[in-house]
Length: 294
Image (cartoon, rainbow, N blue to C red; front, side):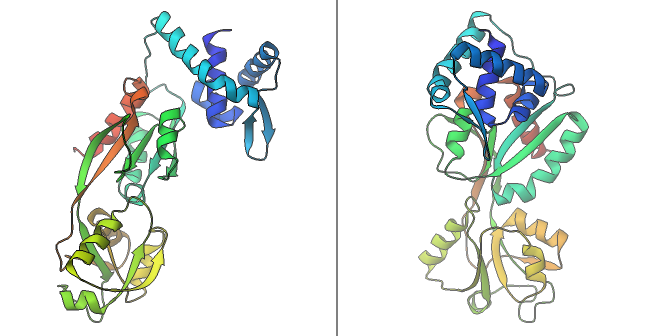
């Protein structure tokens, strides 16, 4: 039993996929299959069984994952392995949990940067959810980027930028011109985006404190198609300012200051303390932070 075999076990357990485990470890799929065969012989158990949901672990594999991960850490410490990450040569997948805001604001710039400085790096995006803390802890996700005040002890964070709110309507709106008044805001029909991490709860709490009631004509789970929707209707939406700026660039809409004082919140990147010193994770965090310092 060597470190390579243990790493294969751990990666297949995390990804539930032979091919994705190979991508992350920089090994051919055939090498992963050979390693799995050796592991199965050693433990006398199938360990992973192919299903419609990927390679699912057997009960014995589930019981092994904690000691295997402890053994990996121990072996790395004993051998004083100095991990090195070379982005120019690296061939791997990073998994990032994102909110809709960071999907719109960060993702295009990140992909363009990676194509230049690390052409072998690929990215998989998942939505922020209740499973995000567990995914960061287990290594199923490398980073989470967005507004996530629910992340507690055991997680590091770095502020990327502060965010306030703007209102958006179609450019030729018949009633809303260049300035939005409180009366206009209360009179118009509004869109409410219910996705987690948008800061929308901050808006609702602020309006409730101010005693402001508005007519929610449409509730949506995310910002998908928001630009086209607003450009084709008289609806109004209150969104984080950078989302509003993006909508202005891609659709025939305009951005207005809200007529009420709304809170400011921070967009951050989060990672688990297990990966604080991991070279690949540190490199990715640096790339993302640099995008907002330019």
